[in-house]
Amino acid sequence: MFSKEVQIEAVSMYLKGVPPIEIRRKFAIKGEATILNWLTNIKMLGTAGLKNVNRSKTNYPYSFKIKVIRWRLAHHASLPMAAKKFRLRNPSLIWQWERALATGRLKPDKQRRKRPMNKQEHDKMKRLEEENELLRIKMAYLEKLEVLAQAKKKLQTKTKR
Image (tube, rainbow, N blue to C red; front, side, top):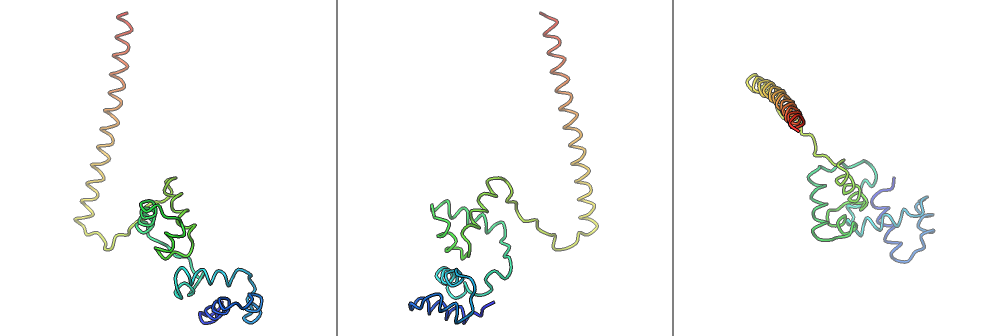
C-alpha cells in the first residue's frame, strides 16, 4: 500500500523524534502500529524487510523449518533471536512449527517426480507393489498362525491341570 520510500521516510522521521500522529497525517497512515511495524522490520531485516510486507504468504520447505528448530534448540535462543538469524518477519511462526512438529502435523514435503517413468521402471514398480502385497498377506497369515498356536498351547495347559 505504501512505497518503500514512504516507509523509510516515515521511519526516519519517527527516529528523529517527530510525533507519530504527525507522520500518520502526512502520509495518510490509518493504523497506529504501522510505523512501529515498519521500524521493527527495518531493525530485524534492514530495508529489505519493507518490501512486499504481508503481500503473499511465504511457504518454507520442511528442511528449512527443521533447520530453524534445531538451531534454536541447540543455541537455546529465543524466538525473536531465531527469527532474526533466519530473516523471518514473525517469530511466532517458529513457535507454530515447533508445535506442529511436536504434535506430528509437520510433515516432509511431498516431492514430485521430475520425469515420467519409462516402461521398465513402471513394470519394476508394479512388481514391487505385488511383492509388497504378497509379503503383507504372508505376515498376516503368520501372525494368525502364531495366535492359533498360542491358543492351542493355552488349551493344552488347561487340560493338563
